[in-house]
Image 1: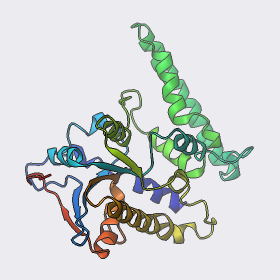
Image 2: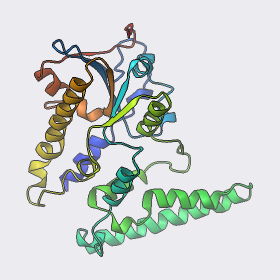
Image 3: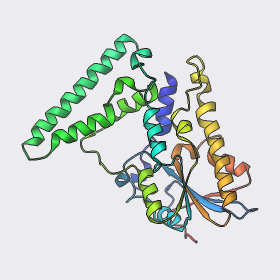
Image 4: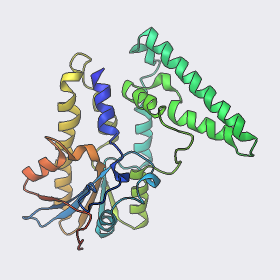
Length: 285
């Protein structure tokens, strides 16, 4: 299924935040946005789905300053809305009584099932060794399994793929800190900034639900990349128009800012002046 591989590439952007650079020209994934007509302004910040402790200490001071200067913070979805979170969790699973057997061959199902059993056994072996040191390792092992592989046989194809990808990581040593976007949302609340969502839970979670299996590969880019980028750009334009005297900080997945039909391209076509912020730039309120 080509579309599953494509979704994975869109979501899991390489961790360029941690790369070492000797030049001040490194890409800090931050752009300034200005509308010369309405004088509205803001910033675009490309995020990645990792614990914030993996990247926040390494991001440029320009990103911190842009966040600090902003009155409003825009995220892909409202991560502090309980109803949104419930919908996001629910949409990862298939409909009632459906299992992954509905789209996996018997052979592939058995391979994944055996892999999940092996994964759980490896966690238990690790916990058994760690328990002798007085660490509550069994609880940690169960939390890891539940967060990644729990109810795997009920997951939609794209979410099962994400789970399998995560199993390739060193989950035991992975940070339990909040993800970067969750951290930024909490920071925005603490600093009394306005928070807005650019997509609904349904739009975020089900970008391919309307496509048939036959045309998924052909329609993938048009339906879940370009159309989403266009919709996000339109909503950002509307938000900046509603708050022309405020600075809007938009924290959106990095993949939406690159290539043809990106958010950056759409905003430029709307008349916005967009410039890449460099690490050695001087920021102004």
